[in-house]
Amino acid sequence: MSQTVLKMQSIYKSFGDMEVLKGISFEVKKGEIVSIIGPSGSGKSTLLRCATMLEKADSGNISYDDINMIISDLEQAAVYADKKTLKQINRKFGLVFQNFNLFPHLSVLQNIIEAPMCVANISKEEAKKTAMELLAKVGLADRAGAYPCQLSGGQQQRVAIARALAMNPDILFFDEPTSALDPELTGEILKVIKSLADEKMTMVIVTHEMNFARDISDRVIFMDEGVVVANGTPSEVLMDSANPRINQFLNKISNE
Amino acid sequence: MKLESLISMLQRMLGASTVTLEVFFLTLIFSLPLGLLVAKGRMSHLKVINVPIKFYLLIMRGTPLILQLIFFYFAPSSLFGISLDRFWAAVLAFSLNYAAYFAEIFRGGIQSIPVGQHEAAAILGLSKLQTFFKIILPQVIKNIIPPMGNEFMTLVKDTALAQTIGVMELFRIANTTSSQYFSTVPIFVAGVFYLAMNAVVSYGFSFASKKLNYYR
Ligand SMILES: Nc1ncnc2c1ncn2[C@@H]1O[C@H](COP(=O)(O)OP(=O)(O)OP(=O)(O)O)[C@@H](O)[C@H]1O
Ligand SMILES: [Mg+2]
Image 1 (spheres, rainbow over the protein chains, first blue to last red):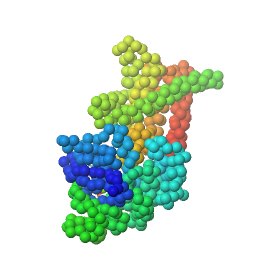
Image 2: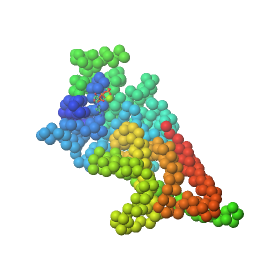
Image 3: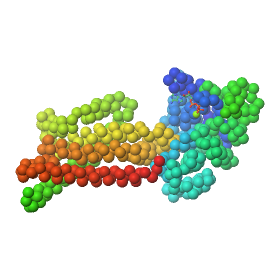
């Protein structure tokens, strides 16, 4: 039986009086690749942001490797772990943003070694060595000295992936990693993610690329209006689904 | 004007210009870090912090600098019986006044940095302090170079106001020399001094701006 890396239970989140997450539960096991799909506004980004502490959940439980990040008390209000624990949990995940969020004033190499050096206290030499290996892996070894503005969107996103990998996370989240890219550039990102999948990297990927989700995922979660509508193998969710909401969504996507 | 009196006049003014430069640099040394702190306080969500700071900003930017100079020179002695040296009273007034303007420039610069930069740093585990000094501030500095250049140049000229509380700075010396020799030449010489200082400031800023142009 493989180990559970991430466990989310009954996550609720509202912005003002708009309820965005209405009791989301799912688990991710070590080495698993989970795709999250669903219509715009269904709460996919909010879910990732709650999992990565960019947003505070209102109630529910979240744990990484059985370390609790939030537990809800009897009144159902989320109680966060102490600072030290949260710091420890923060080291367990990485997040790749839709619009990369590279640091524009730092070179590609500096972008990657910054966190290993000042958060993980790795020596500069060591951090550089790892960074160069990661850059080679994403096909950008020759661009280490470039600045983000000198790179194409696809290249920037590959640097962002290398930067996330440099902290050696147990689980990597992607929020629509190809949505900000020209269609001809999405392939290079999907290839990198595929290579991570081959190395059994645990990943949760929010995507609108249905073919990619079907090919790469162990599991697909379909979200709509803040709830998990379906959670199963790619064929269960994407091909043989009898659920009208899913089929309506898939038809709409394939017509675009 | 005779040559030797011209030379002695220039010497006096050169001496006075060092006082002007001292006021200028001391003001920057105090007001820049203070401005950064004030900017952070102004952006605080805590009312006990941001309300007093808003009040401070209003006073400093809403009243004449010359009045503030007079206040900081005379108020301590009439209120608490301690007298502040004129020079330091001037530096205090300039620092508090310029910190207010710098704070608003810093605030604009900090708020113009996309939230994604903070989020990327947070995900990577950088602390708030690391994020601010390593990620945010360097980008802020690039963005605020033009308005900062303006403020620095204004400060060079504003130092002349220190004469209202009797600081022997460049313009006061120019004035007294001028009445002593019955000549307006010292006033114009002072003008050349200010212009030269600001030429250096202006050059410094365009140099920095070019230096920071390596990205975006
Ligand atoms: N910070 C916020 N403040 C207020 N409302 C928000 C905020 N963030 C998200 N929302 C709202 O929450 C809802 C869900 O947003 P979310 O970004 O999670 O959807 P999504 O599934 O990621 O959509 P998309 O596919 O377009 O990225 C939307 O209606 C959105 O407007
Ligand atoms: Mg989204």
